[in-house]
Image 1 (cartoon, rainbow, N blue to C red):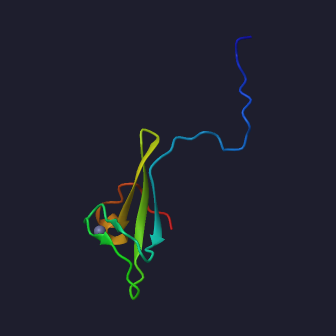
Image 2: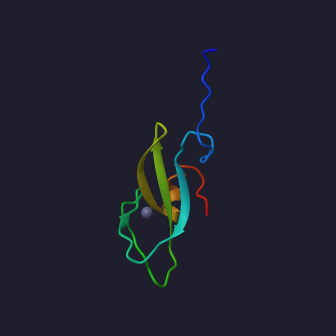
Length: 86
Ligand SMILES: [Zn+2]
């Protein structure tokens, strides 16, 4: 029989194709990232509890980069990486 049985440890779930995904996070103090939509700083403001969308962008199934958006900007941009998970 030529069929090989793979005996991989089953620690990780079956290999799935990585897709870009987006999550909503509070903007933290000292944040120094720029919004990928409006190109303005995603700034922490003590009075205004801002939220940002952090996107892990995969290109061809391989992690490529992280993009940050203001929450409103992400919606304005048409949610390019799908609905942001809370
Ligand atoms: Zn923005």
